[in-house]
Amino acid sequence: MSDGKTTNRWTVLTGALIVQVVLGTVYAFSVFVKPLEAEFEWSRTTTQWAFSFALLTFAAVMIPAGRLQDRIGPRKVATIGGIVLGLSFLLGAMLVDKSHPWTLYLTYGVVGGAGIGLTYVCPIAAAVKWFPDKKGLITGLSVAGFGAGALFFAGPASILLQQPGTGGDAMGLSQILLVSLGISKGSGFGIGWKTFFVLHGVTSALLVILGASLLSTPPAGWQPAGWNASGKSKPDNNVEWKEMLNTPLACMLWLTFIFGATSGLMAIGQWNPLMISILKGRTFAPEWMGTFGRFIEPIGILAIFNALGRIFWGKVSDLIDRPRAMMIMFLAQGIAFMLLVSVESHTAVFLASAWVGLNFGGIFALFPSATADYFGTKNLGVNYGWIFTAYGVAGILGPVVGGVLFDATQQYVLAFVFAGILCFIASGCSVVVWGLARVRSQDLLRPEESVHVHALQNVPLLKDYKPVPESSLDKESGACRKIQS
Image 1 (cartoon, one colour):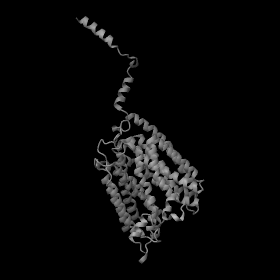
Image 2 (cartoon, one colour):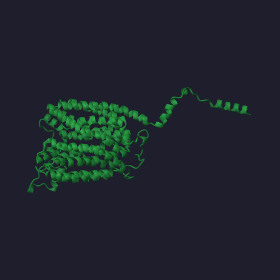
Image 3 (cartoon, one colour):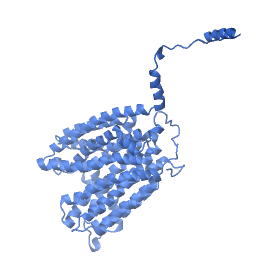
Image 4 (cartoon, one colour):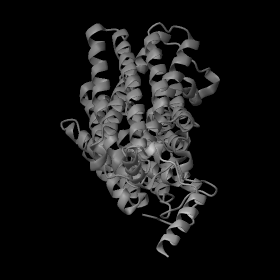
């Protein structure tokens, strides 16, 4: 569906970034954990289930959301998603209480996850359709905000979630704004989790609706000026999701996604305690940096390079193709996890955080781009929705398996070695994806001509055929005319 014929495609990319930054705050769920545990005396397991429900619902809702946005366009679906996301926090502020933790699972987990799932695929599908000449790079840019969202959100949120002051100590609107922008550290008090849920819900809904208003799809047959789609995109490559799921290529993409994302989530879920144990309470940030010091702490570095990795690997994949980029990326990540347990110095911690974030972020640029390459952009919303269910599986396996391995050994070695092994498996799967993609590309290359070529190859003595010279034909024609006369 086309939302307009004169849309500037860079405006669409701007809208995509606004939407994704808001959605990316889901990765900062940990900031809610201690305030909720202190308020309701809940266990860590109790609060973590809300995050698991959010990831599962996020992945599951992407399938119908993708199908819907393919039909009615990204603007409407993303707007609905923004409203649902905002509503989840408003309902949470009203319903969550100590004796009913399931209300948090229902509001933040199911309703909030549905809002993210409805919205997430819209900016990706829109951006890829407007930039067929830069699929990898633009996909990386459009999802970079998701990786960076937690970085901008976690610091201010952790301050505002503190218990509110009383009387003259109450935080005013100007202070709330300064803290929200990361300019001020506050004064040792906040606005409380309920008021924060209301504030965050309203802000999230408004920002997503703003970003959604900039999204659109190009008119049918549109392509960038000076770009020739010949040899790069084939009209018969646009397939329905049922046909896609019947291909070995889609199955292998799904499995590769599971291995790679499970490995990354297993490590990232334990990154903060691992870094604390390595640094032994020391910090990267000098005092003069104030609240901006969070940008150079291990978690901040991981988040920054998580966002940059989506752009970097997206661009690399445009140059060397998706499977090669996957293979190199997962191989490098596996080696990093194997070496990580011996990291001790500040420099090594910085490099490890940057490297792991860079490679983990690349997953979310390469797989939607590969889906668009192999199965077309027409049905990208629903097609990538099915591939993205792998992330829902990884969202359960990664944190749970990592936690079990740590609880069993009280060390991080086994968890990170296992994460490295999964990366090596993902790298091997990428080689299989490469081979299957080449076979599919050959099958899609003018199939009607391919049939005729194969038929002609079976004609006996075809290779020995020699055309008759025109002079001979003239002589024979003359002889025939004499005989007839």
